[in-house]
Amino acid sequence: MRIVVLGASGLIGLAAVVRLQRAHSVVGVARDVEGLRRRLPRVEWRAFDIRRCPRALREAVAGADAVVNCIGALQDAPGEDLDDIHVEVVANIICACNQSKDAPRVIHISAVGADNSPVSRFSGTKKRAEDRLKASGTKWIILRPSVVLGRPVFGASALLRGLAALPVLPVMPGTGPLQVVQLDDVVATIEHFVRKEANHRVAIDLVGPARHSFAELVGIYRQWLGWSPAREFLLPRILSKLLYTVGDVAGLLGWQPPMRSNAQREIARGASGDPTAWTNVTGITPRSLPETLADQAATVQERWFAVLYLLRPLIFIILAGFWITTGLLSIGPGYQIGIDLMLEGGADFLSGPSVIAGGLADMLIGVGIAFRRTTRLALFAALGISLFYAVAGSLLLPRLWTEPLGPLLKIWPIMALHMVALAILRTR
Image (cartoon, rainbow, N blue to C red; front, side):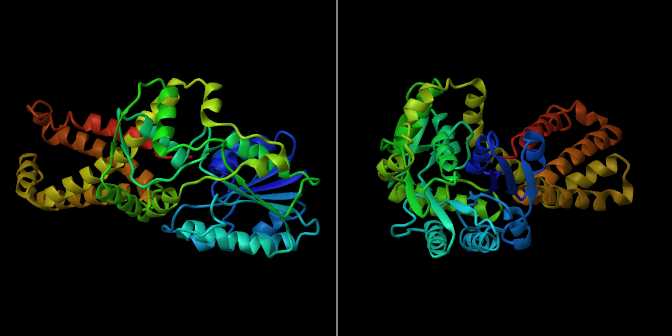
């Protein structure tokens, strides 16, 4: 069978590609596939934006037996409009499938609760996408997973592990019950429905067998990672609201934090349901989180990830703030000090322009680190300018190596932190 997986670089999409390639011819579609081509050479990879390239989508779908749509986003952000991502993408898929002679079945990944009173633009656009698919003439299957957990992590699943590393657990107020579902069970369900003899025109909630509070889930992961139970304290509502607002601001800068206002609304409702229909239709019995983790001993790499997860945003905030602040200081209260140092080094009439140029360069790097689209380039620029400062300082003012505060010595740990930031920049 020929199966097309859309959103093949995401948590569910990539797991589906890995599973389906064992027995089928798989086409993986994502906006960036270069690394994926090297990791999974048996898959036919195609790189394009489904929202902008309907013709490329028609060509990918032609001759397919099934199309698996794993495309989704939590919240509007620069370049990510939920109407486009959830609703218009489905419209493009329907159009492409209707123009294909073979009329492939469409397996659409939605979200649990999307069919019942949407509480945010996330669930609202998910519902409209479902409605459009149901009204089409395609052989559709709608799968509505709860919070998806697995060995690979992203979004809420990564946040759970990060919080598990904290010795003191801040508990968000107003969170509903969660019946988390295992990634392997979700992928097994996709594998079931790509078969031509499987039912179609069905919508199923994919939820785990047990209800947990968010804090209980964190505790399960903490035990699995080998740490003693954490102390819990209820976070004041005003502080939790602030954290979600900070997440929204980070989203506007192009980052994808799991804690944003849509997540707040969705988690207040909870993510629960009845797995009976899922088992009756597919024969799959969903596994609980403790049951699944009991078969997977936590590794040191997973402990590293848990500890680094919440340090990661702190690293980028500190680096962006560091460069912006040094730039402001250079052209502000520290301007005359900079002039004096440049004159001591023999820069003469270039002293003023050099200090101003350095300050502006520092601020530009800081702003570049803050915006996700330019973070990687800005980090390399920071390494380059740090080396330049070290060389220039050594030539002009070698005494800076031996001063009590060691201004040139401090360049090296700063550069090391930039290299760490580059190493953990990607989240997929």
